[in-house]
Length: 386
Image 1 (cartoon, helix red, strand yellow):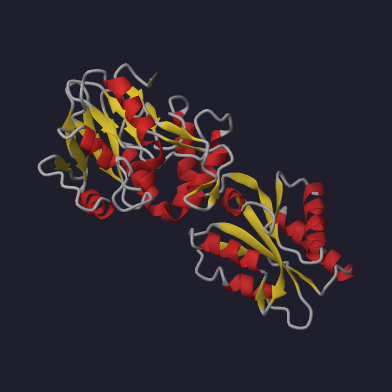
Image 2 (cartoon, rainbow, N blue to C red):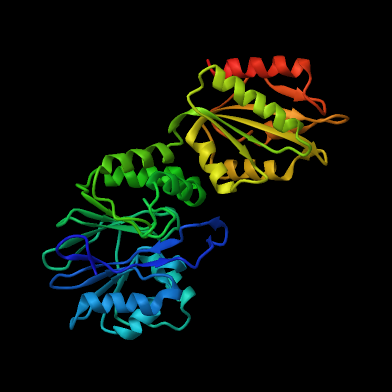
């Protein structure tokens, strides 16, 4: 049992068997599925865990409870990695009351056909409060962060925000890794589209005295909370986190790659604070998306392919635009011969993106890098470093 405060315990689990989170995100250091308990006159459990860890989770809960039984199961998020053991919980503790909102219980009936809670459910409204005795809970709705039923819970006694998936990250709790790197990849991969909704929740949170954040993934955050809150504000407002240039490319026979390498060298020579080069065919797409949102300037380099752009580049751009990519400077390097369309196609894919500043200088290669391309690369580097 891990104590977070005198009355709050952690009962989550680590998953080192998973290779892809949500069937798509590489998680080399596994995942944590977090669950918490407040021990008071009445006992509240916060969310369950992934279905593969039912017995471990129930054992963790039993260890904390001792001879007592829980009074409430607070259901903050219905995604299966957190809700899978709700039925098992209600079978083991039939007197406990499930607490959620109207959307929660609609989803509950869809996930668990035939589950009848009878009078053992409490439907709460945004801002509703629940007393456990010494601890006073307040429910803060967070629709589309990142599902419609999501709600956070604030314990005003210990000043703890149970934040559902917000402030979560990839990685098991016993993995030593930088929080921001995997939290950023998690945020932009999973929550990134919903910046407006995250901003709304951050506004609500700003009115609360928060000293501890307990997410459903990743470590409990107790120190320097301003750092995490500021990052979330930057990410959700689509602001620039770090000054630098990311160059994302695809290359078939190495000529586009050569142009990218030359540009990267020029940028470094000119003192660009950070240059990140990404081969979209070989690197984790989620990592590439993360970097595109981290830095303020992005150069896309690809070949014309079947009258379009190379498939990995199309996937990358679609991954950005569907996550509301905006407020960035964007440049293009295209390679083609008899019917070069890559530059035109790439730019058209951003036509609905907000506040995109396009570089005046572009690079157009005809098969191989030539003398005029060197001048174009020099001009692009100069503009990027202004």
